[in-house]
Length: 138
Image (cartoon, rainbow, N blue to C red):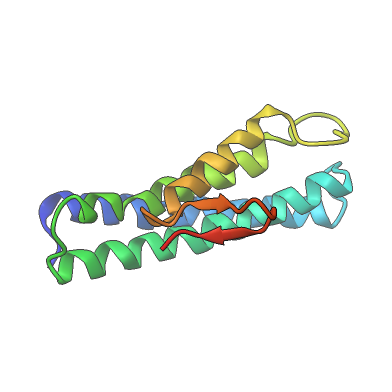
């Protein structure tokens, strides 16, 4: 069972699904040329919408599983990083292509990478060998 704090978080997260559904309507209008958008904007709008939906559901699922299994701190709090990513990553996709006919994303793309950092498990940072190949730390 969720404690009172996590019940409120779960309720708010479930309400955001309405926003994601409404966002789907916007993406549909952009992709079907009812809203002026170039190819970069269309692809970023689709990606932002998809990430929002997936990360909200994943974050909610992780929160319930963590609470049900009594995962100790600080891991229980760190697991909420998926919900933070559900805000940061889609915002990065949408805001980075605001404007009329952008050729490339603006600096708001950093929100995308900030959200990505919140999803990466602790201790699994990339490092590069002298050969240039990326490997995961154990």
